[in-house]
Length: 101
Image: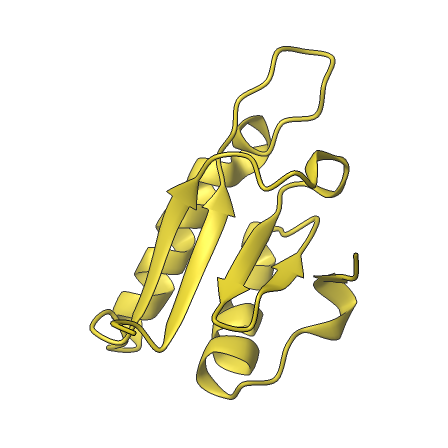
């Protein structure tokens, strides 16, 4: 596997009144994760990127971290540093944001 951790952040766009991760700062989350990884010198071992629908629209904005397959919901820009430091760096998922399907 090329990356130790891979973060897929939903940027799906849906027409109103449906909830849309892309409309709910999905693009900003991608930028924030990339910046946080760059600041910590982790871009060669971890990747954050946009993706289409993760089929969890009601919980958006959503993202999933692989290889664990941990889904997070209602992720705010203020949560990025915590997810990076706790889950990506220290392998401790952020329980308060986890989605259990």
